[in-house]
Length: 84
Image (cartoon, rainbow, N blue to C red; front, side, top):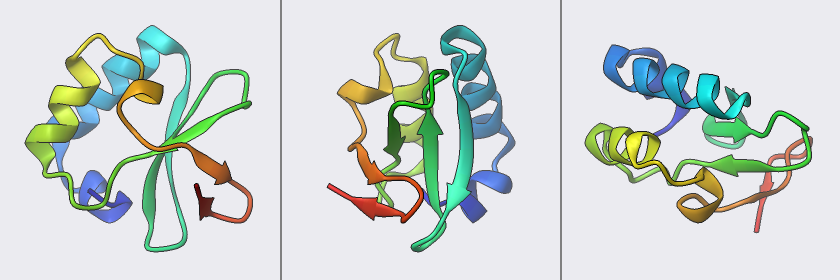
């Protein structure tokens, strides 16, 4: 899922809001390809949603009780939008 898809899916947005409220981080979109990114509350780490994940998978990840660091790849440099 990419960020523009996220903006059009209310159920994914609800799940993201619930996750962010529990973990105190934030979701945002960034280049390249408008990645959907979760940034931890301390701004130390960012993780991006795999672009091929369908909404059902993203919702399952967000509601799984696991940290996104266990489920999504880490963004190497959020300022540059590079991935590991």
